[in-house]
Amino acid sequence: MDRVYLDNAATTFPKAPGVGEQMKYYIEYIGSNIKRGNYSTASSAEEVVFDTREKLCRLFNFKKPENVIFNMNVTQSLNFLIKGLLKPGDHCIVSSMEHNAVMRPLMQLKKTGVEFSRIPCDSKGRLNPEDISNQVKHNTKAVVITHASNVCGTILPIEEVGSICREKGLLFIVDTAQTAGILDIDFERAKMDALAFTGHKGLLGPQGIGGFIVTDNVADIMEPLVSGGTGSLSDSEEVPPFLPDRFEPGTLNLPGIFGLNAALSYLEKEGIENVRRREMELADMFLKGLHDMKGIALAGLEGIEGRTAVISIDFINKDNAEIAYNLEKNYGIMTRCGMHCAPSAHKTLGTFPQGTVRFSFSHFNTQKEVEYTIDAVKKVIRG
Image (tube, rainbow, N blue to C red):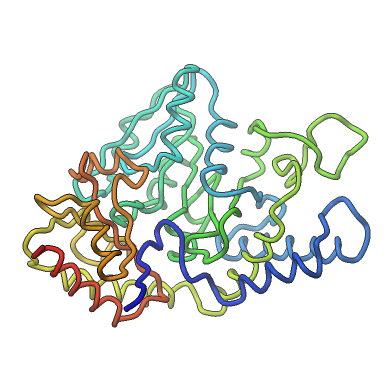
């Protein structure tokens, strides 16, 4: 095979059908900004943007399209949420499986007087929600957790955590980078206060477009990190108080939103449950192919229950980076090796500092590709 792409946890490839065409259509035939002009192409662009907000509301079971905020990606969204909500003297709770998109903003805020506690997950990446209650302090303001690990695919119990947060009066912020478009995510049922998403992973859209969803209560207390022109209230130098303008200064990535709109249409047509079923069939096939294979250690859960199709392997007594290089050079198999921007997760899983080689599947992959990859892994182990 010329190419087997198994790095979908980093960014999906291929994208959903129609994504590129929609982006090209905007650039070649629309081209206008939104909220600035009253001419027809500006109105056409605004319609697509609003339709994309509505599609995201349907996907996440949220009722207010104006509370869907667009920006570049989930990292930017988490920075907006964490830095916009936490003040000196506040305390935050996270899991030990968090990506640096959560941890680096918190480490920055720690220097200003913001505290955080890290809830230890077990060696498979599983979180016990009850452990959160034991870490709540008088100044605890929020819980921020990933929905699923980008290292090993373990899913965290966000609905149970959300219930605890609601009971304790804590803000609940969820990072859906690895699950949006793959798992059923219900904003209301999980009792979230904010949800961060990105377009280029499970949503099958282009890079450079993402965002967050917030309740009105969170929007009222959240400080905008970036401000500027919005096309609204242009006679005032104050930040607009209403959504989405309060958190959407400057020009949006409109080609990206057009592409994301096409991707969301595809997901609505295919159905999230069908996408997940196909991905997990491939993951199950891969995991069974690895079973009893000598010279490797699997990070995380051994079966398909409680996980996504993200699978990490530590090649024992071998250089994982060299293994990943050989898989690509000799077999055309593209993986992701190293720390995956989640050192705390690797420490939890026992794969720090060597990291792992990560194989992450999309429903666009095939059984033939999985069989080929299993055979290639056997060959690189033999050296």
